[in-house]
Image (cartoon, rainbow, N blue to C red; front, side, top):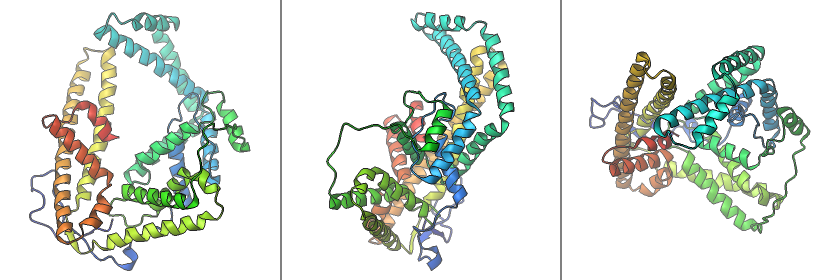
Length: 428
């Protein structure tokens, strides 16, 4: 964002670095057509795809969590998702049953190896015995799941396609993990199927007829005054932009960030907003005022040469993606080794993947160090130019910078090492 490449800096990154091939960037005066934009929007199909991703985060649960849709488009997409899932209800049930059996077997084997006196062992054995010949049961489940998948291939392909779109949208930052997490939390909080009392078919009927079960909150808070609401909403919107707009990103148009930010504020204050008819106009002016203030601070940073650490971050994100894939592979091969512990191919493959994972971790740590080193140098350049306050405003809540600073602190506290258990948070 707001960054244009100019010339190569000889003193930038070491030539033998994983993160070489960089150029010094400048916050240069943008052309009229390049100004930061908070207007416009995604095309309808992209909006639908975003909703498909958000609404299918737990699509294979036996009893689905569903909230009532808030817009006509969300209702349309939710019904589409549920109608495809309805065809795969048996597929989901059988798949979950198979996963439960395999999980019990894995857990039992793990206990027998590490804690043979654990009181859960008899219970697990009894449950597995109750199912009969486990090998035969699993083979039958495999056949039934395969049959259900083939019988309902269009519906299964529908969800596979959403998985592909999700990967693409995450890479392009059209969908972000915090956005997904927030939406999922909202579904769980407003779930109309908390007790699993409704089938997929019943959920379709409820959504189609707009007949949400009525719940009454016992905790009724005193509503904010109109003035206090405006002050609160402005702070929330400003904070949202500061956290979600990356000034080191090449993208100039931030209409999606603005739209998501406005929606975020609206959702947080929905009940209070409804109490003040006509306040929408005041909110619109407030949004535009915050966006204008944000753009003004950007314009104050023009013509200052900086190191384009956003390019380092892009490389680090690729490393993170590779790490996630390798971790999944390691988990898979470890599962295989529980049933075939002496398999030479599995053991050699595991060693190779573990070595690759360690190399990727070191690449990420290297990138983190470069990231913070050159961010600090950028900060000094803005300070020398008398623009530090603007930079602090625009980058002070940057999630990537904060993430890297937290990781570096952890790294130093653990004798130049990031503990294995901490990587899950880094990769989330």
